[in-house]
Length: 90
Image (cartoon, rainbow, N blue to C red; front, side, top):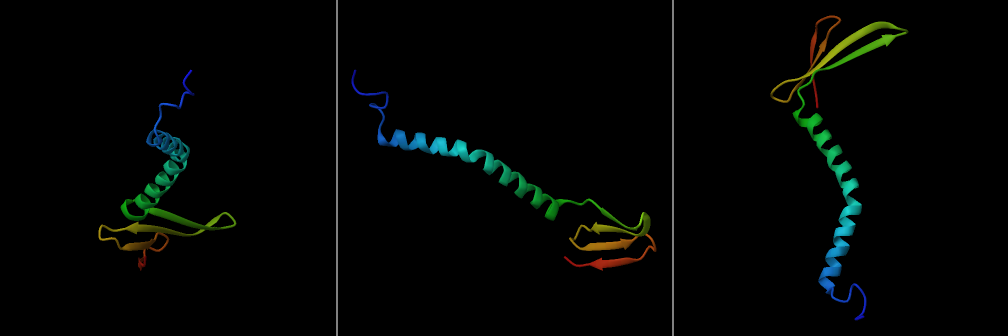
């Protein structure tokens, strides 16, 4: 027998093998980080959903607001209890 199973491997082959092992170990963390980053980016810059906020005091609704993002990026807060509009700041 001429050595072991790694006798025909060059240093470059061993280095590539180690890189592949480390990439497999880091893949789950990279996936989670990428998913969180894309979720943040989508909700921060692309989402056009309206947000409804309801304030309650001991089960009684005191105030209701609708926070709306316009096409130009500005934010408007609409008081649904009185119908007043207020400009918000980012």
